[in-house]
Amino acid sequence: MRLYLVNPSNPLVSIVKVKESRWNRYRVWKPLNLMVLAGLTPPEWEVTIVDENLGAPDYSAMPRPDLVGITAFTSQANRAYEVAAHFRRLGVPVVMGGIHATMCMDEAMARVDSVVTGEAEGIWPEVLEDARQGSLKRLYKGGLAEMTDVPFARHDLLPAGYAIGAIQTTRGCPLNCSFCSVTAFNGARYRQRPVPDVVREFQSIREKHVLVVDDNLVGTRPEHIARAKDLFRAMAQANLRKEWIAQATINFADDEELLALAAKAGCKGVFIGFESPTPEELLGLGRKFHLLKGRDFRAAVRRIQRHNILVAGSFIMGLDIDEPGIGKRIAEAATQYGVDNLNVLFLTPLPGTRLWDQMKSEGRIALDAFPEDWKYYTLTYPVARYKHLSLDDIIHEMISCSREFYSMPRILRRVCRNLWGRRKPLISLVGNLSYRSNIRVDCEAYADFKRQRGKRYD
Ligand code: B12
Ligand code: SF4
Image 1 (cartoon, rainbow, N blue to C red):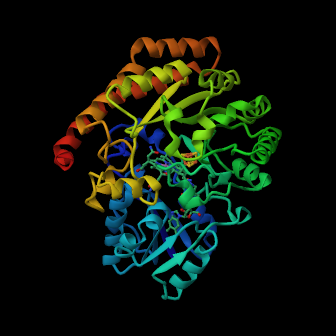
Image 2: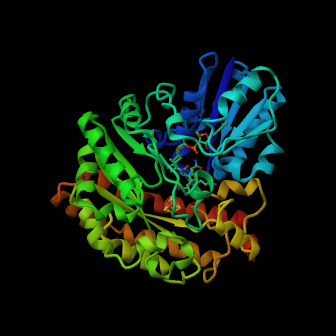
Image 3: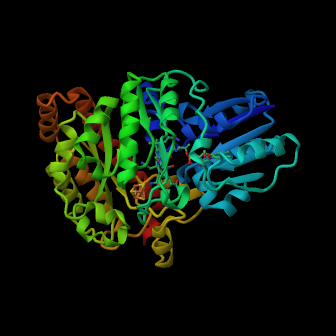
């Protein structure tokens, strides 16, 4: 039995432009979801993972599969349906799973043979058995998996040439931010994989650099932190010789022992969500507000950097409190906190979130011709109507934020600081310059966007 697992591309996401610049190949992240699905697949299935981010293949030149499984974030949904239509025309059954199919189940069910909602661990073998017998059901509900059931991802199935491997050590997040899908999808209970499983899987990854995909690597409660310390100790003891980056909340900086152990285990960088230059006003955000309020961010960032760990700060633009001038305020705040990189995203109502419900009821979702418009749900396009910012305003604010933070003098100051602190100055330089060079590309993309979709904001 032949199974294709497809990760659809979105041409609006710059990392997929592999053909235009061969360097982009090294910026493509591995589709861990399909690697895990392959790990759950019994050996009688011959599995091929097709990552369209490396270039969409000519499917008609490939051997006909018995089953196709497609994953999709919301921003990949359009292309997912195109791929599904191609295989269904050939009479090959198509199953879709992942976050978008879960949040927009009816939309997906109208376009594929079978939808799997939630996490796949508890249900995928049954789906495959039904497919083998030609009796696929229309809907399977995966729910939340036991972390002991998470298999080792099939790191061997993708071609060499990715710069960064991927692994997951925890699922779920109790903070339930209004704009984020994680709590709705993976639940509020923070679930951790057994430490020995993580260490053994790490050893099977061939890349030297690894993205730990967890939404919050260290969690929020004392028992989460204690487990994170155990994991880091075990990783250091196993002498993995890997360098890794991860996502964490700002409480990562609260515990010196935790930071020292993370660094010893190979941590080289963390993405931290600050969300707004005035987090005190973010009561509507969710429980994360309590983690952010009243903190000395500059001191926290310094504490992390002192362990030779780079900090990338993430902010959201378009919150209801944001007014003209927000671009410069974010750039100033990020500079003042001392982060090494800044990533600003437009507030985006993703389906299944509280923000979606709120904006929908207020008639503020500007791009709502679905599924076509999903391709703009990359958080890099302003798809909604913002309270105090018109379409032109918010685009102007985004560009002025990038120009301010990534001005040459500021880049040089950051690189010198990293040189002085012996914190990977080259990575910092390359990262900053690549963000800077993207400003021109972003301006062109916004101009196209306004031409094609600008009327929807009238
Ligand atoms: C790693 C990651 C990335 C990586 C992508 C790696 C990749 N897959 O290609 C990068 C950094 C590139 C990325 C980019 C983006 N991401 Co992202 N990302 C994540 C993150 C943190 C982890 C995903 C992961 O690997 N999980 C581990 C795997 C094992 O879990 P899983 O994906 O849920 O898969 C399980 C089930 O869903 C199911 N399943 C999945 N696919 C399928 C398919 C079939 C057939 C079946 C049966 C089952 C099934 O089975 C799996 C095992 O249980 C998630 C948050 C999260 N917790 O999921 C956000 C998340 C998926 N990202 C999100 C977003 C918004 C984006 C971006 C649009 C914006 C951005 N800048 O972050 C871009 C879009 C890129 C694009 N191509 O369009 C949102 C998506 C929400 C939505 N409705 O789409 C999430 C949920 C975060 C959030 N805050 O809400 N991301
Ligand atoms: S803390 Fe991060 S993962 Fe958790 S709900 Fe908020 S944005 Fe999502």
